[in-house]
Image 1 (tube, one colour):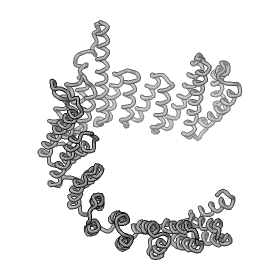
Image 2: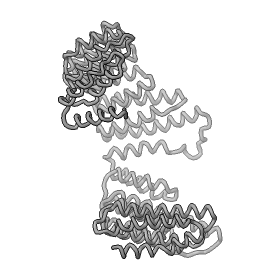
Image 3: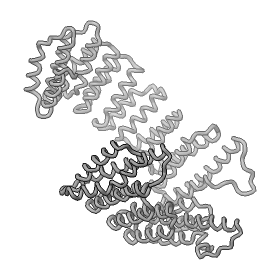
Image 4: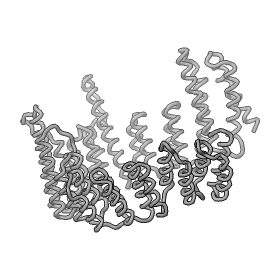
Length: 598
């Protein structure tokens, strides 16, 4: 192995001598490069090989190449690239070849090889890398697309890209993504040929070329791909995606019309077809001959007309296809237009009217999902349409009586509307809901009561909630109750609440930490109370929470009324109670504290 490493280092010497001779590197730097290269060579020549060693080798060489580039720019020297850079690039390619042969399945390694070749190697070399990669990873359509795009965009070889797509489709005959990118490529190719032909015509050059036939220039190859693909891949979504690609090319109007007509013929029973047809009305300009609107008001009226045409299509759609999916498309469109900003009061009014009309029809038919009721309520609330939001919320809670979120939104609307019957409506919600989904509503009731009612009323809400909510959910409620008590009645009130709840398990560590913090904020901070809170917390969490023990010890050490002599006893109690990793974490933290790192 030593002979191989020595031979590879000697192979480097001509390029290193050139680097020193032309002044890009000093003698000391060349020696450092040789030492580093020897270490790297040893790691990739030993019997047990690791991928990380090859990656480190390649990264070092790339860093060296970039450094050489920067120094060339600095001194303005651009000669001897064959002897220096090309030699390094060739060596890196050899390392990549060895690595990719050993770890064939590592796609990321292949992609790193591709990225390197794109920057440093020739196009012919990169083409070979793609071929080798695809021979092993032929089951990955994304890699075929990457290779074809490179052939098309970087090598400017439409024929090579076409051959790659055709080979890819043999492996993946039902891959929608491949068909879409192949379709796009053929349209790009036709567009490129059209531009070339225009340039020749401008230069008055008569060029007869089979690629310049009228069919190819009009996108006939793309049309063939379209026809083949839709016969294999069914569904309006794929059809619409091809139409969207075709619409990017102005010359393909005939093809666009053909795809659009086929969409309407083949997929009449698909909501996506109707959705696309309806939204297309927004893009259709005023008829030729009509004067284009110039004033803001005229533009708003024109947008309103387009939206009316869209809704007319949707109305026809929901009659032809009265399904939840179709109504979802309609309501989604109405919501999108409703939430779109506009300075025109006329347009805003029309959008609100359309949204509510479509909602009422869909609600009557019970063809809206809970999610859409929520979206509509939130949108209406954002725009302060409280009456309409309440109408939707009432309808939603009638239909989804067991949905906590729906009741919460209804109550949010009522609170913003300043309704006098809010407490009664909270009670009504709890009648319909299971206790396990009621926590957010109880918290909302308490927050509303804190703002709108007396302390006694709010405390009554918290007490009711604690009777209704049990288990893990009650932990959050207890913390909220304690916070409210401190905000509204100070430390005395908070301590009273703490005392009333201290045997009402379960708790969180935060429940006790809050009381410790409240005590420390008092002018006459009582160390006996702090100890009491720590002791209560340790009864609950002493076997798992090492931080609690550490904080207790720090309190005794740092508090003016603390007793440092208690720390030893606390330490041994902690060691008895803590288990497993918690005990190890405690010992480590204690050792750091002892050495002054905390």
